[in-house]
Image (cartoon, rainbow, N blue to C red; front, side, top):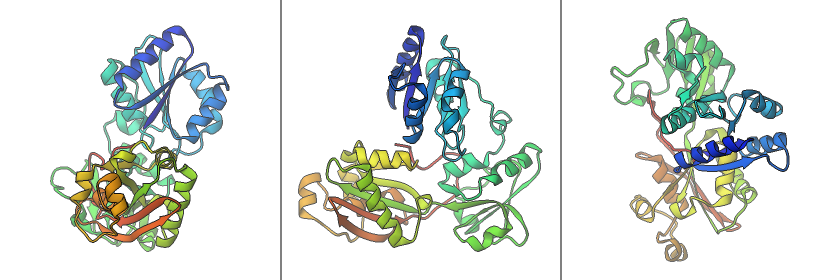
Length: 349
Protein backbone atom coordinates (compact mmCIF):
# COMPACT_ATOMS: atom_id res chain seq x y z
CA UNK A 1 0.00 0.00 0.00
CA UNK A 2 1.38 3.40 -0.99
CA UNK A 3 0.73 6.11 1.58
CA UNK A 4 0.44 9.83 0.80
CA UNK A 5 0.76 12.13 3.82
CA UNK A 6 -0.24 15.77 3.64
CA UNK A 7 0.29 18.49 6.24
CA UNK A 8 -0.36 22.21 6.38
CA UNK A 9 1.85 23.69 9.11
CA UNK A 10 5.44 23.36 10.27
CA UNK A 11 4.39 21.23 13.23
CA UNK A 12 2.34 19.04 10.91
CA UNK A 13 5.32 18.68 8.59
CA UNK A 14 7.47 17.44 11.47
CA UNK A 15 4.83 14.87 12.45
CA UNK A 16 4.57 13.72 8.82
CA UNK A 17 8.33 13.14 8.79
CA UNK A 18 8.06 11.11 11.99
CA UNK A 19 5.31 9.04 10.39
CA UNK A 20 7.47 8.28 7.36
CA UNK A 21 10.34 7.29 9.63
CA UNK A 22 8.08 4.93 11.59
CA UNK A 23 6.80 3.28 8.39
CA UNK A 24 10.13 2.56 6.72
CA UNK A 25 8.77 -0.73 5.42
CA UNK A 26 6.07 1.11 3.44
CA UNK A 27 6.25 3.56 0.55
CA UNK A 28 5.38 6.91 2.13
CA UNK A 29 5.38 10.24 0.29
CA UNK A 30 5.01 13.58 2.07
CA UNK A 31 3.20 16.59 0.63
CA UNK A 32 2.67 20.09 1.97
CA UNK A 33 0.42 22.62 0.29
CA UNK A 34 0.46 20.94 -3.16
CA UNK A 35 0.81 23.34 -6.07
CA UNK A 36 -2.22 21.97 -7.90
CA UNK A 37 -4.46 22.59 -4.88
CA UNK A 38 -5.84 20.29 -2.23
CA UNK A 39 -8.87 18.89 -4.07
CA UNK A 40 -6.97 18.03 -7.30
CA UNK A 41 -4.29 16.44 -5.11
CA UNK A 42 -6.89 14.28 -3.36
CA UNK A 43 -8.39 13.30 -6.72
CA UNK A 44 -5.00 12.07 -7.93
CA UNK A 45 -4.49 9.99 -4.77
CA UNK A 46 -7.92 8.38 -5.19
CA UNK A 47 -7.22 7.59 -8.85
CA UNK A 48 -3.99 5.86 -7.85
CA UNK A 49 -5.70 4.04 -4.94
CA UNK A 50 -3.18 5.44 -2.47
CA UNK A 51 -3.89 5.70 1.24
CA UNK A 52 -4.31 9.32 2.34
CA UNK A 53 -3.19 10.58 5.74
CA UNK A 54 -4.14 14.15 6.63
CA UNK A 55 -2.19 15.76 9.45
CA UNK A 56 -4.70 18.34 10.60
CA UNK A 57 -8.43 18.76 11.11
CA UNK A 58 -10.99 16.15 10.05
CA UNK A 59 -13.00 18.88 8.33
CA UNK A 60 -10.14 19.60 5.92
CA UNK A 61 -9.94 15.92 5.00
CA UNK A 62 -13.70 15.60 4.52
CA UNK A 63 -13.91 18.61 2.20
CA UNK A 64 -10.90 17.44 0.19
CA UNK A 65 -12.16 13.90 -0.46
CA UNK A 66 -15.92 14.59 -0.68
CA UNK A 67 -16.13 14.80 -4.52
CA UNK A 68 -14.39 11.44 -4.94
CA UNK A 69 -16.12 9.20 -2.40
CA UNK A 70 -18.07 6.60 -4.36
CA UNK A 71 -18.08 3.05 -3.06
CA UNK A 72 -16.95 1.41 0.18
CA UNK A 73 -15.46 -1.45 -1.84
CA UNK A 74 -13.22 0.76 -4.00
CA UNK A 75 -12.62 4.04 -2.11
CA UNK A 76 -9.10 4.82 -0.97
CA UNK A 77 -8.40 4.51 2.75
CA UNK A 78 -8.34 7.93 4.45
CA UNK A 79 -6.99 8.74 7.91
CA UNK A 80 -6.51 11.87 10.00
CA UNK A 81 -3.82 12.61 12.61
CA UNK A 82 -4.03 15.61 14.90
CA UNK A 83 -1.03 17.96 14.88
CA UNK A 84 -0.05 17.10 18.43
CA UNK A 85 0.33 13.46 17.51
CA UNK A 86 -2.20 12.16 20.01
CA UNK A 87 -4.76 10.42 17.81
CA UNK A 88 -5.05 8.66 14.45
CA UNK A 89 -8.57 8.37 13.04
CA UNK A 90 -9.62 6.25 10.02
CA UNK A 91 -12.52 8.06 8.35
CA UNK A 92 -13.02 6.14 5.11
CA UNK A 93 -12.60 2.56 3.83
CA UNK A 94 -11.78 1.09 7.19
CA UNK A 95 -12.08 -2.55 6.15
CA UNK A 96 -11.73 -3.03 2.39
CA UNK A 97 -9.20 -0.23 1.99
CA UNK A 98 -7.36 -1.13 5.17
CA UNK A 99 -7.70 2.22 6.96
CA UNK A 100 -8.43 0.58 10.34
CA UNK A 101 -5.46 -1.74 10.00
CA UNK A 102 -3.19 1.15 9.01
CA UNK A 103 -4.46 3.21 11.95
CA UNK A 104 -3.57 0.39 14.32
CA UNK A 105 -0.11 0.10 12.77
CA UNK A 106 0.57 3.85 13.04
CA UNK A 107 -0.75 3.93 16.59
CA UNK A 108 1.52 1.06 17.60
CA UNK A 109 4.68 2.49 16.05
CA UNK A 110 4.12 6.13 17.01
CA UNK A 111 2.42 5.51 20.38
CA UNK A 112 -0.82 7.21 19.33
CA UNK A 113 -4.40 6.42 20.27
CA UNK A 114 -6.35 4.84 17.38
CA UNK A 115 -9.92 6.11 17.18
CA UNK A 116 -11.83 3.28 15.51
CA UNK A 117 -15.56 3.82 14.99
CA UNK A 118 -16.54 0.81 12.87
CA UNK A 119 -19.30 -0.92 14.84
CA UNK A 120 -18.17 -4.51 14.33
CA UNK A 121 -14.62 -3.58 15.33
CA UNK A 122 -15.43 -1.77 18.55
CA UNK A 123 -17.74 -4.61 19.60
CA UNK A 124 -15.16 -7.21 18.54
CA UNK A 125 -17.65 -8.87 16.23
CA UNK A 126 -17.34 -10.77 12.95
CA UNK A 127 -16.96 -8.40 9.98
CA UNK A 128 -18.07 -9.95 6.70
CA UNK A 129 -16.30 -7.43 4.45
CA UNK A 130 -13.00 -7.83 6.31
CA UNK A 131 -13.49 -11.61 6.19
CA UNK A 132 -13.96 -11.37 2.41
CA UNK A 133 -10.83 -9.28 1.99
CA UNK A 134 -8.68 -11.61 4.09
CA UNK A 135 -9.84 -14.64 2.12
CA UNK A 136 -9.61 -13.25 -1.42
CA UNK A 137 -13.38 -13.27 -1.89
CA UNK A 138 -15.13 -10.87 -4.23
CA UNK A 139 -18.21 -9.20 -2.72
CA UNK A 140 -20.88 -9.59 -5.39
CA UNK A 141 -23.57 -7.56 -3.64
CA UNK A 142 -22.24 -4.82 -1.37
CA UNK A 143 -25.75 -4.23 0.00
CA UNK A 144 -25.43 -7.50 1.86
CA UNK A 145 -22.68 -6.12 4.09
CA UNK A 146 -25.04 -3.91 6.10
CA UNK A 147 -27.61 -6.72 6.44
CA UNK A 148 -25.08 -9.23 7.75
CA UNK A 149 -23.46 -6.67 10.07
CA UNK A 150 -26.87 -5.75 11.49
CA UNK A 151 -27.57 -9.40 12.37
CA UNK A 152 -24.12 -9.75 13.95
CA UNK A 153 -24.60 -6.64 16.07
CA UNK A 154 -28.02 -7.91 17.20
CA UNK A 155 -26.30 -11.12 18.34
CA UNK A 156 -28.35 -13.16 15.88
CA UNK A 157 -26.97 -16.34 14.34
CA UNK A 158 -25.51 -15.94 10.84
CA UNK A 159 -25.54 -18.99 8.56
CA UNK A 160 -22.75 -19.59 6.05
CA UNK A 161 -22.71 -22.13 3.22
CA UNK A 162 -19.36 -22.90 1.56
CA UNK A 163 -18.85 -24.66 -1.76
CA UNK A 164 -16.71 -27.65 -0.84
CA UNK A 165 -17.83 -27.65 2.79
CA UNK A 166 -15.36 -28.57 5.51
CA UNK A 167 -12.64 -29.35 2.94
CA UNK A 168 -12.33 -25.60 2.44
CA UNK A 169 -11.77 -24.93 6.15
CA UNK A 170 -8.45 -26.21 7.49
CA UNK A 171 -8.31 -26.70 11.27
CA UNK A 172 -11.78 -25.27 11.83
CA UNK A 173 -12.26 -26.57 15.38
CA UNK A 174 -12.64 -23.75 17.86
CA UNK A 175 -11.83 -21.05 15.32
CA UNK A 176 -15.22 -20.28 13.82
CA UNK A 177 -16.29 -16.79 14.98
CA UNK A 178 -19.00 -16.65 17.59
CA UNK A 179 -22.45 -16.39 16.07
CA UNK A 180 -21.56 -18.08 12.75
CA UNK A 181 -23.22 -21.37 11.86
CA UNK A 182 -21.98 -23.47 8.95
CA UNK A 183 -24.83 -25.06 6.96
CA UNK A 184 -24.69 -27.60 4.10
CA UNK A 185 -23.82 -26.63 0.53
CA UNK A 186 -25.75 -26.00 -1.58
CA UNK A 187 -28.07 -24.36 0.94
CA UNK A 188 -31.46 -26.03 1.14
CA UNK A 189 -33.09 -22.87 2.45
CA UNK A 190 -32.04 -19.22 2.50
CA UNK A 191 -28.54 -18.75 3.90
CA UNK A 192 -27.04 -15.51 5.12
CA UNK A 193 -23.67 -15.99 3.40
CA UNK A 194 -22.93 -18.22 0.41
CA UNK A 195 -19.38 -18.65 -0.86
CA UNK A 196 -19.27 -20.08 -4.35
CA UNK A 197 -18.28 -19.38 -7.95
CA UNK A 198 -21.59 -20.85 -9.14
CA UNK A 199 -24.15 -18.11 -9.66
CA UNK A 200 -27.15 -20.45 -9.57
CA UNK A 201 -26.80 -20.91 -5.79
CA UNK A 202 -26.66 -17.20 -4.98
CA UNK A 203 -30.45 -16.82 -5.05
CA UNK A 204 -30.47 -18.36 -1.58
CA UNK A 205 -27.96 -15.83 -0.20
CA UNK A 206 -28.22 -12.54 1.63
CA UNK A 207 -24.46 -12.06 1.08
CA UNK A 208 -22.89 -13.41 -2.09
CA UNK A 209 -19.12 -14.05 -2.03
CA UNK A 210 -17.17 -15.32 -5.03
CA UNK A 211 -13.65 -16.76 -4.62
CA UNK A 212 -10.90 -15.01 -6.55
CA UNK A 213 -9.50 -18.17 -8.09
CA UNK A 214 -6.92 -16.91 -10.59
CA UNK A 215 -3.30 -15.81 -10.31
CA UNK A 216 -1.64 -14.00 -13.20
CA UNK A 217 2.08 -14.45 -13.72
CA UNK A 218 3.80 -11.70 -15.64
CA UNK A 219 7.18 -10.72 -17.04
CA UNK A 220 8.08 -7.71 -19.14
CA UNK A 221 10.82 -5.58 -20.58
CA UNK A 222 11.74 -2.62 -18.43
CA UNK A 223 9.60 0.49 -18.81
CA UNK A 224 6.35 -1.02 -20.03
CA UNK A 225 3.47 1.33 -19.18
CA UNK A 226 0.40 0.45 -17.11
CA UNK A 227 -1.61 0.76 -20.34
CA UNK A 228 0.61 -1.85 -22.03
CA UNK A 229 0.30 -4.11 -18.99
CA UNK A 230 -3.45 -3.57 -18.83
CA UNK A 231 -3.92 -4.42 -22.51
CA UNK A 232 -2.10 -7.71 -22.10
CA UNK A 233 -4.01 -8.60 -18.94
CA UNK A 234 -7.31 -7.79 -20.66
CA UNK A 235 -6.48 -10.21 -23.47
CA UNK A 236 -5.64 -12.87 -20.90
CA UNK A 237 -8.94 -12.34 -19.07
CA UNK A 238 -10.92 -12.45 -22.31
CA UNK A 239 -9.27 -15.73 -23.21
CA UNK A 240 -10.23 -17.23 -19.85
CA UNK A 241 -13.66 -15.60 -19.68
CA UNK A 242 -12.92 -13.91 -16.35
CA UNK A 243 -12.86 -10.35 -14.98
CA UNK A 244 -10.64 -8.32 -12.69
CA UNK A 245 -12.76 -9.43 -9.73
CA UNK A 246 -11.62 -13.03 -10.31
CA UNK A 247 -7.91 -12.21 -9.89
CA UNK A 248 -6.42 -12.93 -6.46
CA UNK A 249 -2.93 -11.65 -7.26
CA UNK A 250 -0.38 -10.81 -9.93
CA UNK A 251 3.03 -12.43 -9.58
CA UNK A 252 6.52 -12.01 -11.02
CA UNK A 253 10.23 -12.26 -10.23
CA UNK A 254 11.57 -10.06 -7.44
CA UNK A 255 13.64 -7.89 -9.76
CA UNK A 256 10.31 -6.63 -11.11
CA UNK A 257 8.90 -5.64 -7.71
CA UNK A 258 9.28 -1.94 -8.54
CA UNK A 259 8.36 -2.16 -12.22
CA UNK A 260 6.24 0.97 -12.63
CA UNK A 261 3.68 -0.32 -15.13
CA UNK A 262 2.89 -3.47 -13.15
CA UNK A 263 2.84 -1.61 -9.83
CA UNK A 264 0.50 1.08 -11.14
CA UNK A 265 -1.92 -1.38 -12.74
CA UNK A 266 -2.14 -3.61 -9.67
CA UNK A 267 -2.41 -0.65 -7.30
CA UNK A 268 -5.20 1.00 -9.27
CA UNK A 269 -7.11 -2.28 -9.43
CA UNK A 270 -6.36 -3.03 -5.75
CA UNK A 271 -4.81 -6.39 -6.61
CA UNK A 272 -1.81 -7.66 -4.61
CA UNK A 273 1.48 -7.83 -6.51
CA UNK A 274 3.75 -10.56 -5.16
CA UNK A 275 7.27 -11.45 -6.28
CA UNK A 276 9.63 -14.40 -5.90
CA UNK A 277 13.38 -14.86 -6.04
CA UNK A 278 15.14 -16.75 -8.84
CA UNK A 279 15.67 -19.68 -6.47
CA UNK A 280 12.00 -19.77 -5.46
CA UNK A 281 10.91 -19.80 -9.10
CA UNK A 282 13.41 -22.51 -10.04
CA UNK A 283 11.92 -24.77 -7.35
CA UNK A 284 8.45 -24.66 -8.92
CA UNK A 285 7.75 -28.03 -10.56
CA UNK A 286 6.14 -28.41 -13.94
CA UNK A 287 6.67 -28.34 -17.69
CA UNK A 288 7.28 -24.76 -18.78
CA UNK A 289 7.89 -22.83 -21.99
CA UNK A 290 11.60 -22.30 -21.46
CA UNK A 291 13.67 -19.47 -22.90
CA UNK A 292 17.46 -19.48 -22.93
CA UNK A 293 17.42 -15.68 -23.29
CA UNK A 294 15.24 -15.26 -20.21
CA UNK A 295 17.45 -17.68 -18.27
CA UNK A 296 20.59 -15.74 -19.18
CA UNK A 297 18.89 -12.45 -18.30
CA UNK A 298 17.15 -13.20 -14.99
CA UNK A 299 18.51 -16.59 -13.96
CA UNK A 300 15.39 -18.67 -14.54
CA UNK A 301 14.04 -20.12 -17.81
CA UNK A 302 10.46 -18.87 -17.42
CA UNK A 303 9.01 -16.13 -15.22
CA UNK A 304 5.28 -15.84 -15.91
CA UNK A 305 4.27 -19.51 -15.67
CA UNK A 306 6.49 -20.26 -12.70
CA UNK A 307 5.41 -17.10 -10.85
CA UNK A 308 1.71 -17.85 -11.36
CA UNK A 309 2.10 -21.33 -9.88
CA UNK A 310 4.37 -20.12 -7.07
CA UNK A 311 1.72 -17.64 -5.94
CA UNK A 312 -0.99 -20.34 -6.02
CA UNK A 313 0.75 -22.44 -3.41
CA UNK A 314 0.09 -26.16 -3.22
CA UNK A 315 -2.31 -27.58 -5.79
CA UNK A 316 -2.29 -24.73 -8.29
CA UNK A 317 -2.94 -25.56 -11.96
CA UNK A 318 -1.69 -23.70 -15.01
CA UNK A 319 -4.76 -22.77 -17.07
CA UNK A 320 -3.19 -20.40 -19.57
CA UNK A 321 0.30 -21.08 -20.86
CA UNK A 322 2.79 -18.32 -21.62
CA UNK A 323 1.48 -15.64 -23.95
CA UNK A 324 4.00 -13.17 -25.38
CA UNK A 325 3.35 -9.84 -27.06
CA UNK A 326 4.86 -6.36 -27.11
CA UNK A 327 7.69 -7.26 -24.73
CA UNK A 328 5.28 -8.70 -22.14
CA UNK A 329 4.70 -12.33 -21.17
CA UNK A 330 1.71 -13.50 -19.19
CA UNK A 331 0.31 -16.78 -17.90
CA UNK A 332 -2.52 -17.74 -15.56
CA UNK A 333 -2.99 -20.38 -12.90
CA UNK A 334 -6.01 -21.45 -10.88
CA UNK A 335 -5.52 -21.82 -7.14
CA UNK A 336 -7.21 -24.10 -4.63
CA UNK A 337 -8.97 -21.70 -2.29
CA UNK A 338 -9.61 -22.26 1.37
CA UNK A 339 -11.26 -20.27 4.15
CA UNK A 340 -9.37 -18.89 7.15
CA UNK A 341 -11.12 -17.14 10.01
CA UNK A 342 -8.23 -14.78 10.71
CA UNK A 343 -5.38 -13.43 8.59
CA UNK A 344 -4.92 -12.93 4.86
CA UNK A 345 -2.91 -14.69 2.18
CA UNK A 346 -1.17 -11.90 0.31
CA UNK A 347 0.61 -8.70 1.23
CA UNK A 348 -0.43 -5.61 -0.73
CA UNK A 349 2.17 -4.12 -2.96
